[in-house]
Amino acid sequence: MMNFEKYVNKIKVKSNTKDVPVFSCLIKDEKIAFFSYNNSYKRKKITGHAEINAINKAIRKVNNANLSDFTLFTTLEPCLMCYGAIKQAKINNVVYLTENIKMSFRNDVNIDEIKMNITKLEDLKLELKYQNIISDFFKHKRK
Ligand SMILES: [Zn+2]
Image 1 (cartoon, rainbow, N blue to C red):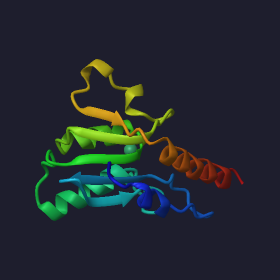
Image 2 (image 1 turned 45 degrees about the vertical axis):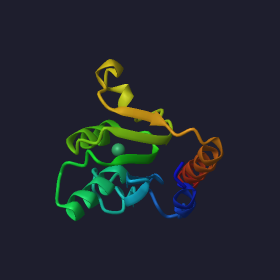
Image 3 (image 1 turned 30 degrees about the horizontal axis):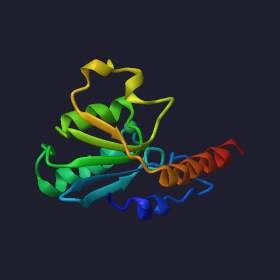
Image 4 (image 1 turned 135 degrees about the vertical axis):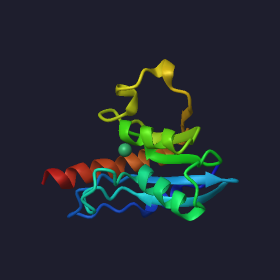
């Protein structure tokens, strides 16, 4: 299994941020090729989700909009917008760390129509660590 822990550890919740802490990366040959974080609020871009940032970075660098050779890893299950971007980039394999209860693409897409492999990373220790980061974020936000 790949070591995502160091990236999850890099997610820092700043008290002044309004961006939900999400990390995403594109993996090829067991290596993280491109990664990004959610900066939607900071950049004032609705499309600034971690998945789309990582996909855009990859497209610019490899100069190809077909990223079917890559697997996308994301700490939070993708939303409908990112699901669309993942499909547009022809990425067939997605791995996520924790469920996105409110905004999961599954809330809007018929499960039987999903033609990509979306699996949950089975790493409870890392998932709990990430869930703590998320809950810290919402605690700060409510203040
Ligand atoms: Zn998204």
